[in-house]
Image 1 (spheres, protein in one colour):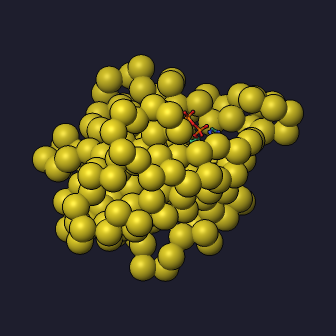
Image 2 (spheres, rainbow, N blue to C red):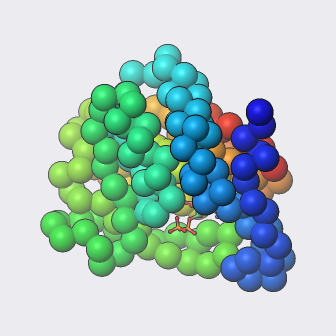
Image 3 (cartoon, helix red, strand yellow):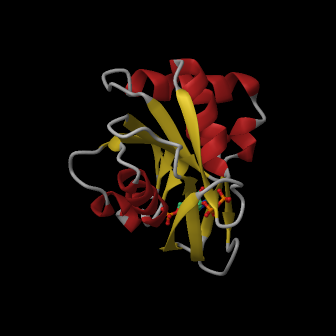
Length: 171
Ligand SMILES: O=P(O)(O)OC[C@H]1O[C@H](OP(=O)(O)OP(=O)(O)O)[C@H](O)[C@@H]1O
Ligand SMILES: Nc1ncnc2[nH]cnc12
């Protein structure tokens, strides 16, 4: 059983030159989805985690079940204009565009240990921005967990060394 057998690779989406790693083909298989989340749970088991933060939208489908499995809370990191309460926002670049991410100012308590979860690490822009937001709120990012890492884009280089990075699949 190889998780990669469940990832659909679509060339030139959403723009020419991007090799898109589609996780919907893994998510629709209940057994494999559960195995993937359970494997991430084992990988992060040495960390002390108070809350998981996940960036919209695909970070929710990894972060929320992982939070449930660990019995910790989940803090959504959303695109600009979606959160109803008081927010902080940070703009960033990603592999195929630009965007802005936001968090509620009360999403994280000062000093809480935070694990960031997402489906995929590409340039690292999304995760670096997520770290920026969480640290502005006084959170302590202890790790980042992904289903997929695009190693050639070297997103890890954008992350501080103290943050442990966990990935199930490499491309
Ligand atoms: O490492 P990076 O270069 O930042 O790229 C990775 C990010 O890009 C994708 O999200 P996207 O912004 O496309 O949003 P989506 O989850 O709503 O599809 C993916 O889910 C990661 O969050
Ligand atoms: N190549 C890629 N495939 C899927 N999601 C992505 N997010 C950023 N780059 C991506």
